[in-house]
Amino acid sequence: MLSDTELKVAVLGLGYIGLPTAAVIARTGAKVLGIDVSQTVVETVNSGRVHIEEIDLDGLVSGVVARGNLRASTLIEPADVFVIAVPTPFGDDHAPDIGYVLDAATTVAAALKPGDMVILESTSPVGTTEKVRDLLAALRPDLKVPGMTPGTPDIAIAYCPERVLPGRILVELIDNDRVIGGITPRCARKALQFYRRFVRGACVTTTSRAAEMTKLTENAFRDVNIAFANELSVVAENMGVDVWEVIRLANRHPRVNILAPGPGVGGHCIAVDPWFLVHGDPENTPLIRTAREVNDAKTGYTIGRAEALIESMPGVPVACLGLAFKANIDDFRESPALKVAQALAKRFGERMRIVEPYAQALPAAFDGTGARLIDIDTAIEECPIFVVLVDHDVFKSVPLEERAAKRVYDTRGIWPDQPATPQHAAPMLLRTG
Image (cartoon, rainbow, N blue to C red; front, side, top):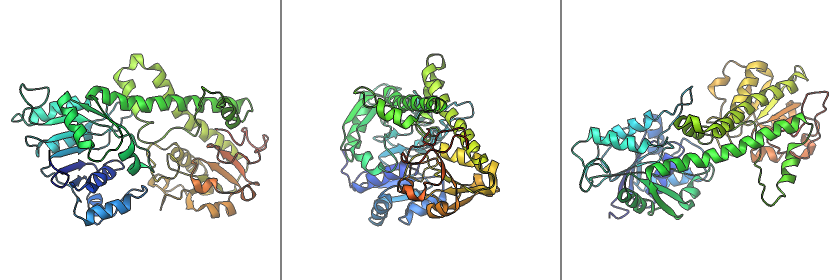
């Protein structure tokens, strides 16, 4: 086995997972090449800077680039390990699109040599790693591919999904347990040896299909539980009950742990992955499908409630607090907060003020609406109406005396001491989910 300083690793995709993964591997002393289709991303990384917001990532990237352990390119080069960490979106019909994965595998095929290992990290439908295997076998008939040709294979192929939390990615890449699924047990063992170089958590081996389904199951489980909380919040509001108090009291039961509701579900994982299971077996996934529909519908429900509040005070400026899909990050992927704010901006135009401390400018979707990006202090001074969409720490820190006179729709429950918005002013309770 190669030493850390001899090992060459290529990471395809330098996004929210690929870049931190590349940097963490480079910190071990391995020579890491990050591959990305964006020349801007390549130039940013090669200058020792980052294009995404993640705690401590800028310092780590700067250090490993300066030491010559990490560099970026748009072109593939020979390596010992190829890690594929590209997006896996879905289409309008919620069918998963693994085109980026197969494109990356095609790129890798040109550089493969005997002894190499290919690891897919992208969240994928069950069977995707086998499709990567089949593609590599077709493109490189000169190589013995595991599970396809008799005898000792020339390369190893495995699947190892990340399971990290934005804002804690660098810590969790190292400390979290990893599920490593090999095309064969031999492949899984070889991949395990690779992850043991930088992972402190337990590394458990299984088949590629089991590992793929494990990743989808984790996020579908969370989605179902969030759907219960979101549905409960609507029921509580319509019955005139504070859902946050109900959840707090119900969770005193030793076997109950209801999650927090919100304006929907966002991010590239929970809002996407359950559809991969539904698409794979639509006849036997009614609960998973319903949870997705409940969580998507909560965004529309939130828009309607916010519109009612805004209409109750014609002409006054309105502050939407947050665009990210979760607190204290700059990631807007599949964000329900972003969808709500966009819908309100399209309807109310120049009345809308957007407060997002992790954005330097409003996304392009706000162009032409008249909405403006402001900071929280300006919002407190100018806006009688607050629509809380994200529980950023800076929003939680606003004391009661600065918001007591505001009319607030708090979809995150960050201000439990806020006086309730009068029922005659809008058909809602203040602290609704």
